[in-house]
Length: 245
Length: 261
Image 1: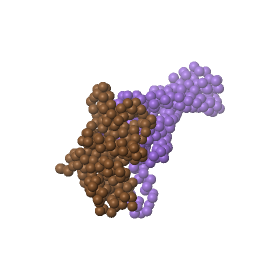
Image 2: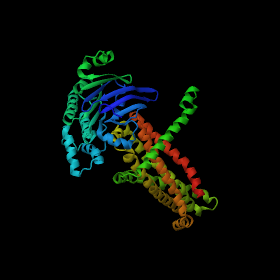
Image 3: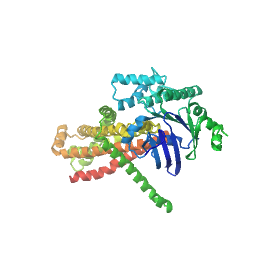
Image 4: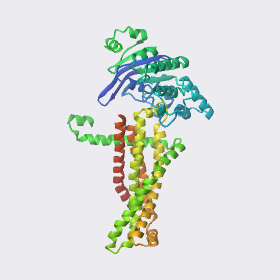
C-alpha cells in the first residue's frame, strides 16, 4: 500500500492497562525534514516515537516506514527497518560495560562487514561528527550528561541511518550544552540529509531544530505546522503550552 | 477472564491470572531461546558468562558442600551408632550427596548468587533503556543476553554439582575419620562398591533442569523489571524466591521420575 512521507502513522491506538495513551494518532514525517513532537509530560510522546521503529506495537492502526508497514512485523523482520531508523534515547542508554568507542562500534560489529581498521576508522569518523575525537576510551560512567548524549548520537549515526529518532535530547542539560545538542541535530540533518523526529517539551529547543512541529495532547495530534504557523497558532491548548499560561 | 473478575467483583481469579501471565511470559522466552540455538553462537560471550557464573561461584559452592558433608556425617554417625550401623555412614552420605543435596544445595546457592545477579544486571539494563537500545539497533537481546547465560548455566551448574558431590563426600570422610573412628579406606571402599553411575546421573539430570529454570526465571524477571532501582530490587527478590521454590518443588517430581527410570 502506498503511504505518504518517510514515516506515516495512521490512526494509532495504544493503551497500557486501563490508561489509553494514544487515541487515534495520525502523523506524517516527510523525507529529510526535522519534525518535532511537542507535548506535556506523560502525554505519550515517547510512546509514539517508539512506534516508529517498532519498539512498541500499536493496539490498532498502522505505522509505515519508507512505505513498509512495520507494526505487525516480528523482531527478525524489523532488523532491516531498524538499520534505517536509529534512535537516541532520553537517558542515552549507552552500555555501561563498554567504552564510548565500543558502544559506537557495537552496531557496526553486528551489521557491517568491516575489517578491524575499517571499524576503527568509522568509529573515529562518527565520533568526530559529534566533537568527541579522543574520548572513545572513556566509559559512560566517566563522562558528563552532554557527552553521553553526543556519544549516543554517534552510536545512532554509526550505521548511516536514513532517519533519527530523538527522545528528549536536551532534557537535563545546561543551556550551553542544550544549544550544542540543538546545533548537532541541525548539522546532522543538513550534512547527512537524514529525516529526524524529535520528541521534546523544551519549547526553545523545539523551535531551534524544527522544520515542522506537531502537538500531541490527550492521545491525538492536535496541530501540525511550520515554525511560523506554530507561533501564530489559534489553537488554545497549544498557545497555552507554548506560553506556559 | 479479566471481565469475569471485574463483573463479579471477585478477586479470587487475580492470582490465577498472574500465574498464567508469568507462565505465558516464561514460555515465550523459552521459545525465543530455543530459536537462538539455530543462530550464531557467541562463543566469547558464553565463555565470559561461564567464568562469571561458574568459576566465581567455586568458593561458595565448595564451602556449602564441605560443611554439609561434615555435618551430615556427624548427625548420621551419632544416629546410626544406636543401631550399630555406623559403618554405613559412607554409603548413606554419598547417596544423599549425589542424589539430593549436591544438586539441590548447589542449585539453591547458584539461584541466590547467580540468578539474582542476572536479574539485577538485565533489570538495570532494562530500566535504563539499554535493552531497548539494543533492539533499536536490530540486535536481538535474547540472543545476546539470555542465550549465553542459559548455556553457561547449563554447562557450569552440573560441573559445580559434581564438584559439590565430591567435596561433600570428602567433608564426610574427614568427620568420619576424626569423630566417628571409621577408617578412611573403608569409608571410600564402601562408597565405591555401593554407588552406581545412576546415582550420579540422577543428580546431574536434576542440575540440568535447575540450571535451565534458574536461567529462564532470572532472565525473564530481569527483562520485565520496571520502575527504577525499586523495581530492580523487587525483580531480584522475585528471582531468588521463584527459583528456590521451583528447585524444591521440582526436586520431588524429578526424584520420582528418576526412581522410575
